[in-house]
Image 1: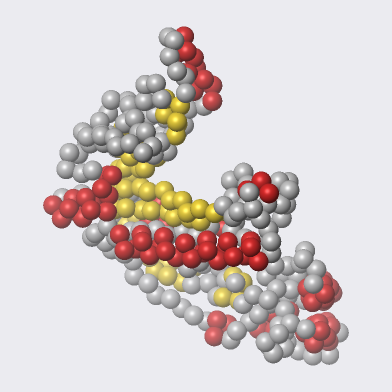
Image 2 (image 1 turned 45 degrees about the horizontal axis):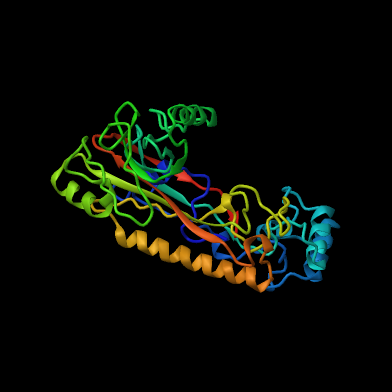
Length: 354
């Protein structure tokens, strides 16, 4: 299920660059094909896909009729860039109700967009990141390396055994915390002592002092970014990637599972982890709390509709106690993009069926 916040095949950083409102100038060209609605399979353009469309393709193959460019695109239901018996068969199978047919049949063709965008000659520097590593319960050491990579299972086990040999607990937890990333790409906890605050659910904790910049508290990102940017020349920018996913559809977080827990196929209407909704917040001067809340609201609507989908087809697996488990997640990063050079570049996306 896609929303208007969908950004395909794009990292958070690339999305940040392409949507930076301070530097973007858009020029969008819409072709005649966009104005003329082309639906894959609707060859005669009567608003429905039927045996009449199959007959038209057969006549075209036999040389009894000609097609316009739009009809050629609509008739290529097998999508192999030629019109032949494969397209006839694919459309017949679609009309007969087969499930393993081209999923684009019935979708509308959209031309790609051409935009002129500002492209940075060097990448913005990551200043802070809200990270969620494992943390030792005994000594509050976050299990991340200086370069931001996570410890291996063996490294965590070795650390735990050190505490066991000292007669201490070897348990650990996962915990979100902000980390400072220096110019060399080294990750630091905010007070740079190699420890993070011991957060206990339901209890208050004392945040770390940001020893790298005492004027900025990333935990108050939406508010402190505004104040920071009003007084400093090295502006900070927030990038927030937000997505919705469903455990009923993605039981292991990455693989699509069927009702019995085995690997299955995508089902129409389900959220796919590889096809999630995204929203990138890239303020020009201020942190966009309204944009964040709007994105969250939009994704909440997506999840509500998705829950109704599962309920409507009675797809409520026993291993989730007959409930739909879908969530909104997000990753937040704060960049410093001061003193960056760049250039304007024309970029064109490919056409697509939707």
